[in-house]
Amino acid sequence: MRKFPLFVLFPLLLATSSSLYAQKKPVALPASAGVSAATVERVVKALAADDMQGRATGKPGGQKAAQFLATEFQRIGLGMLPGLTSYEQVFPAYESKVAALFVTLNNAPVPKEKALLISSQSHLNWTDTDEPATKVVVVGPDDKVQPYMRDIMRPRENLVVVLHPVHDEEFRRIAGYVSRSAPRLDKAGNPYSSLVIMQALPAAAKVTFKLAANTTTRTVEIRNIVGVLPGKDSARSKEQVVFSAHYDHIGLLPAVAGDSIANGADDDASGTAAVVALAEHFKKKNSNARTLVFVAFTAEEIGGFGSTYFSRQLDPDKVVAMFNIEMIGKPAKFGPNTAFITGFDKSDFGAMLQTNVKGTLFRFEPDPYPEQNLFYRSDNATLARLGVPAHSISTDQIPTDKLYHSVDDEVQSLDLPNMTAVITAVARGAAGIIAGQQTPTRIAPEAPKPAPSTGGSK
Image 1 (cartoon, rainbow, N blue to C red):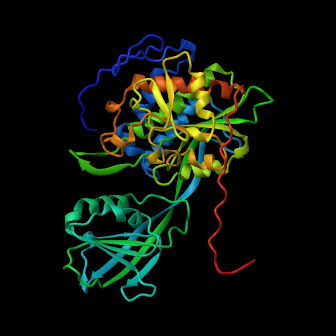
Image 2 (image 1 turned 135 degrees about the vertical axis):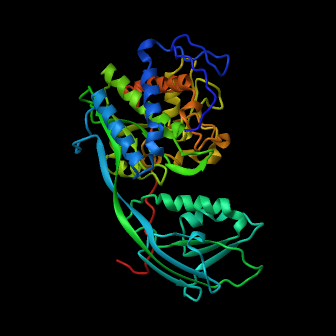
Image 3 (image 1 turned 180 degrees about the vertical axis):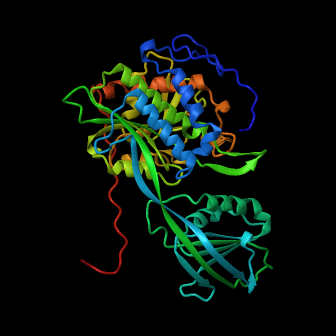
């Protein structure tokens, strides 16, 4: 863990405390509306600790985080999702690794440390004379690598990329991705593969190559952690309100000043701590008319697999609303005691929350970063596409967040009092929905995408 200057954190006094970051007072909510600041701090520190090793999906640190959260749900006294016998919603994912790789470029062998293969295919045998031809991209010393990164990581055709050695940093970044070998949901995997070679080529040189490779695939069990508070109103108990966050992060990175652990304190230990604190809060209140489902998702960072699997186990027509909490550890651009809601214009969910926190100093605002497409970049998206008013609540100033996906995303960078105020405001904002007195409008569901044509007919 890297050392930071000490931040002076005052305890959160929900009614009267003052903010360190502005001359506004924090939310003046009644004591009964507040979540436990002690729980928030304890959980976020546990999840972002070095011994969680960055909570990568399918890795020991991710499994340790899952066990910790299951223990928290048991401590609180949550029930289990119908059909499960524990808090763990386990499902398979698949992980491929290169077992053998031989490459020549312009008739010369490429050293193994200068070649990277991204593939889930068990056997590959390529040459430059293949039909159809493998796409070849040469990235010279004055070219940018970034425009090709998407196709390297998720190829849409077989691809060979030759990087000039000046792009060593980008090559090492790709090597880190390959070494982490993120799991996938589809056993067959991507039918296309990409090969990256770091080597200087003469200007306008013709590229010839040969590649022979084998990969191995193993099944990995990954898990969401899910707990339930059954509804108290028989007329409303079949209706569900979901509170969610993802507990996974990106694991280990190339070391910076001796630190290689991407602790993910803000992303998204902060949101996961909120889910635990809200579960504890609503369990103590014991007055929810609708059934509350609390879920910590796995695999958000590698494709949203956890929320995808979760959504398939529910009837979306019974889900009244989803509060997905994503990166709330630092004040929003609107100042302390504020948070923003993604997809604000897609339902009246956000307007309801705004109404429900009137009389406090807290404000919910529309997403100020529409160009970032945040509504479809988190775990709310799967249920939103099915028509559920599923929105993410965040405070992250993502265009300028220099700690995002770095080894410096640690607890010391968080504003814990403001974070607790955000969670308390979520509890207040959700009150009418939980009580069955408010029902957000549905989001227009997306039409299923047609299957690609195979040239045949039924």
